[in-house]
Amino acid sequence: MDNEYSLGAASAAELGSLTSGRIKFRHLQCFLAVTQFGSVQRAADSLSITQPAVSKTIAELESILGVRLFERGRRGAEPTREGRLFAPHAAACVGALREGVDELSRHGVEHPGTVSLSVLPTVAPALLPPTLAAFRAQWPRVSVKVWTGSNGQLLERLKSADTDLVVGRLSEPEGMVGMTFEQLYREPLTVVVRNDHPLVHESNVTASLLARFPIVVPPFGTLIRQSAESVLTAFGAQASSSLIETLSVSLGRALALHNDAVWFVPSSVVEHDIALKLLTRLPMPFASADEPIGLILRHDRAKSPALDGLIDAIRDVGREREAVRIGMK
Image (cartoon, rainbow, N blue to C red; front, side, top):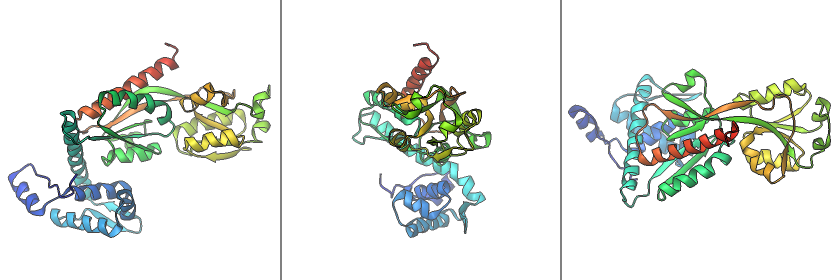
């Protein structure tokens, strides 16, 4: 997309102002990035451009609008009142551009189009392969950008319109302002070790036995960590155990397979390894705890046929997973 694309306005007076000022896509892109990351340098890194280029672009936008959009200090770049007022409209403009690209793709125009999805790393391995297969069958020319991260990071991407949708967990009410949560399925917590782990052969796994091995858990503050903490507390092993905190599925898997680690992980992440007999479930008290996984969207999201197709594919796979969980299949 040409960064010199100029945006129109709703009224005649505003149209004259914006036409003379020539607000461009790059202005909105930089503004939304700084809003999301709270830092000019981090925004520059995310856009793969230099920090002076971002500063210059923001200065241009502030000159065009005639207001200051950020207060800069030791803590980074904090949006001003005017910046907060402008943010949802900037996000809506970027969303509308994405919708237009999708519409062109739908009608056979050469531009292939793109939709973006942000998903928890512990959810992606089981949910996305069947979802993207179904989506590609319907929209073979549309590209999909996939981002992973903590639930808080994913919600921040959605707030700044840097992603079209999130598959994650319900946040606190103040973190969900302007967004909707639609539950797809519930994700059980499980505890796994490698198939020939010493604990597999123990008839009675005690806290002292568990303490001999590293325990891999999600980072503190995540909902699934709370479930893991309740299991460890019930088992009496929390204080005496060595904890490794990570959201990385690949690292957790490697530690379980090669470092004798005991891995607390959503069940869907390891179902394939269990089927291949690489990992096995370790009986633990209350290890059947589960939590809701859902589809999170902005209230003001732009309509897009391709995005709707991706949402439908996610819903179908989510319903399938929930049916399996409750024993309907």
